[in-house]
Amino acid sequence: MYKSVEQTANDIGMSEHQILQYIYAGRIKAVHDGENFLINSAQFETYHQQLERIKEEIEIWKNTPIPEDVDIKDED
Image (cartoon, rainbow, N blue to C red):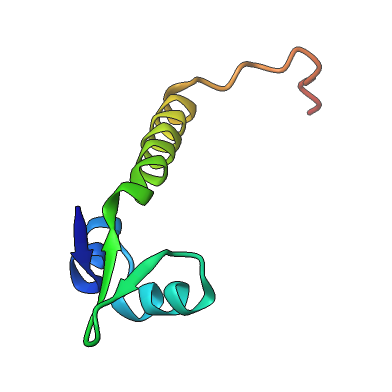
């Protein structure tokens, strides 16, 4: 499915200006129809999967208690 730059920016949480810069740099593939760029949204599936995985890892990290260090000595 092809989306406009505005729709793509909303979907992935970036500004339209940044999306256009990525298109011009070749980091995002797009089709120019004479007036607008159209972006195939399938190319962001991996991005969304990686983003979800990172969010899950951050939650696991936040919920993991810090173990007590056995080498710490109370030096008063």
